[in-house]
Image (cartoon, rainbow, N blue to C red):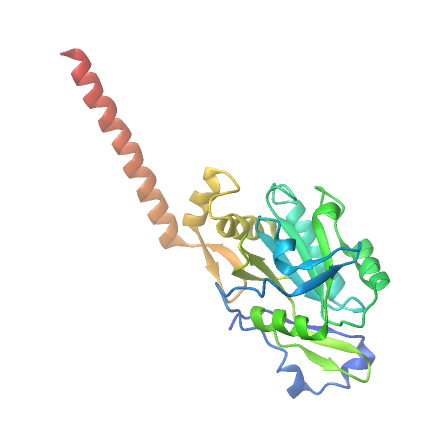
Length: 256
C-alpha cells in the first residue's frame, strides 16, 4: 500500500461524526497497470456526456478524485497538482490532460464549476484541457474500485474522507502511477507523464532522468536513486566509448 496521506474532506465540525477507526478504512491500494472502466459514462460540467475512454484524449492523463463541496483539502490538492503540471514544461492538450472526478453524485454542476474556478491553475492552457466530471453512484464506484480508493462517507454531514492521491494514467486507460496530491512536484509529474506516455512525449533527456530517478512508493514521488544513477552513467560511458572506437576505426580506414 502506498503511504499517501489520508485527506479528510470535511469541515472540522463534521470530523467528530467519523471515528478514528473508521478513518483508518479510508485507504489507497493502487492497482498499477489495471484498466479503468472505459465504457462507463461521465458528465462534464460544460455539458458533454461521453464514455470514460473519450475523456482520455489519446494522451497521458492525471486524475484526482475530489468532493466538490469539500471545505478543507480537496481544493488545495487540485491547486497543488495543477500548479505542478503548469511547471512541468509539458503542453496541456498535446502532452497531457487533467481530469477531476467528483465523489458525490449529488453535487451540482455549479459546485463543480466553483471548485474549478477557485482552485485550478490558469497557466499553461490548463483550464481548456482540464475536465471536471460527474457520474452516477454506480459508475463512481466502478472508478474508485479500479483506482484502489476506499472513501468513507459521513451521511450526517454529506462529506467524504478519502486518500489525497493523483493518478497518472496511460493513453489507453491503464493506471501507471499513484502520487501524493499534497506533496507532488513538477519533476515527479513530468517523469510520471513521460513514463505513462511510453516515449510519445517529452525529450530524450527525460528518458535519462527515468534511469536516474526511481519511484519511491513510500512518498509517492520520484527520488534520485544511486544505483540507477550509476547504471545511467555506465550506459552513457559505453555509448561514448563506442563512438570513440567508431571514429578511430573510421580514421584508420581513411588513412589506408
